Length: 218
Image (cartoon, rainbow, N blue to C red; front, side, top):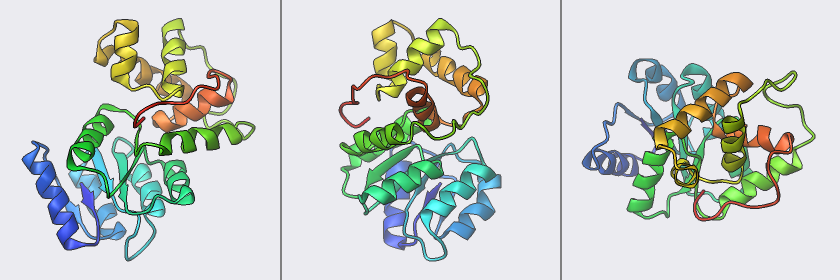
């Protein structure tokens, strides 16, 4: 689903996605429309602009995550401001891409978002992880005592927290991409978390990551 109030941009994004083989289930111009149709459309990925006429994209992100938890929000915005990025991620966006991105980068971001990766314009991932480290003393989203993860789940969690993609983790551990995804989903369920971004924060808060930063567009 594509959410953007500029008709030419919205139509262009929908066209690019369709030509790349994606099924665009809805294109809408504002947050209210997005919330009205998401239940029936049930998209895997929502490509969302932050600047909407009726409300902020951050509020829309939060509402969409509640209305359709399975949908992954990829923000596509002209703003690279630190606060916009952090607010969107804290509201539940699992990726943030600037509108200046090349078409190939955008299509790759949509694919990886659908697969469960956290995707950011280069340079923004370090910003997000840095903020989570700053908030490491805040209450844990999952709440309560940490449930037991298996040794493999913990190993993968450590790698996720450094910004590695599922493909990179699979290659490092000689596992299939699907196996890595399954381990992450199991960890999310055990920890009562909703997405990979919350999983990264959990790992940082529990000392499961060192000082290394992600590379590339992670």
